[in-house]
Length: 434
Image 1 (cartoon, rainbow, N blue to C red):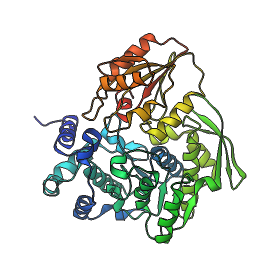
Image 2 (cartoon, one colour; image 1 turned 180 degrees about the vertical axis):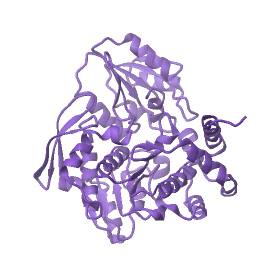
Image 3 (cartoon, rainbow, N blue to C red; image 1 turned 30 degrees about the vertical axis):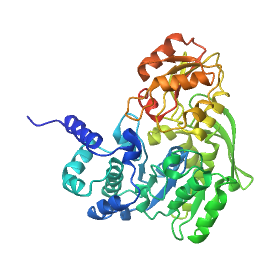
Image 4 (cartoon, one colour; image 1 turned 45 degrees about the vertical axis):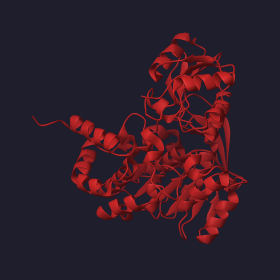
């Protein structure tokens, strides 16, 4: 009996997950320190990424939001937009979208089956195959432009074989220090690796430690450099559970007044400024108008199928999940929680074992009730280690055998006017998201 596409797809995913090194699951053993494999793989595929213009995005936090903002605006203007992001939450296909629509199961199955021989010869990682798959799909779809987000770092990231029309670096914070370095300057140096010769670059956030790194790299590469926060000011006004309202100024003059954006959180100000600066720099090739930009901002999640950032899972009590998973991201997330009205905060928290646990836990409020858990991946941090470290820092709570069990316990205990926050890791969010 012929297997249906769902069975074939499951078997293909099993091959990708179990036969290839996958950083998402196993961490450092999947990290490649050069671009040899991805270059060989793409050469075999006849370098599909050369068939369309790209925007390349790196940074510690805000890459996904910025990528979706740019994609949504371009989509609203009628352009066919490829979007590559990582990691995924529930569905592998979240990584590769065209105008918000996931890549088909059939395309993935066919791609893997047709190229297994070269995979066995080159021995690429999971991420390298995924990048090549995205590049190939966007070429076959004849996209007008592709937005490509780096996975880890920049200089040695598999996506860094492209020559984009624009490079974007959102911000720099501490994350993956074992690969990128233990200072902001070193991390910035790795991210600056996406700056290409005579290709303009947008820096989302002016930071004392990192600005000289980017300036030096841009000078070396003869690239125009634009600091978004020098040209755009995005002022949060109010928010609800689905939209945040901003005043947006360009060069100190009003651009959008009381603009609703379908992203939650005042911290999105930086990402909005970065996206607008990027869109401004490509507007000669991709003409745009204010009405369509405004409409795209209001309808962003439906346009792009964006998940995982301050996503509302339910009301009464409010349950919000968020994928912040490093110091910079958690700092913003916890600041955002302070702006919401609720009686008691309940935190369902899990982490992976290659993060700075103590530094991350220090961002959580001590008066919250905690439900500790381990994300269901090999990299998941032992829940007993997490709960013990939290207790030492004055965070009181209980350990649970799984993420779903921890969330169920939080829902049982929380009252209607309480708030439940689910996070600490992308992989915790992946187990609760819809």
